[in-house]
Image (cartoon, rainbow, N blue to C red; front, side, top):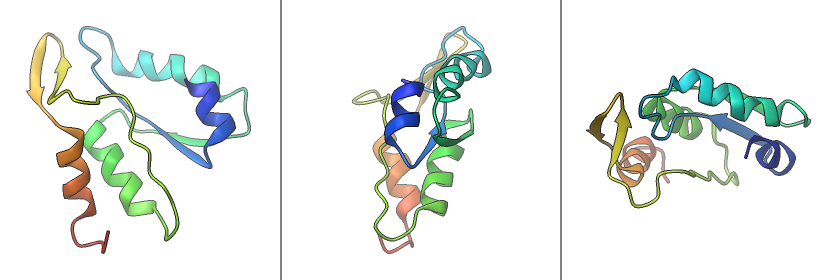
Length: 100
């Protein structure tokens, strides 16, 4: 996943999906190992809400934001607990007031 993003995207934000019982930073380490072999620019932001906000804060006119991973899920599972979280709601909130 990281290698593909590094080759094809102008910029990639590595973030958390459903870490469940795993350390999110270790998951990002695995993804980062793939992206490091490319010339792709990236940043790590483990907190998914913060990562989505960062994407919208730094997007310029003509940019395309691809948010991958959660799909239809309306939660994020961390440490065996399901926290309410829908990507579409994160996007709506991040896009508010930005003319998007």
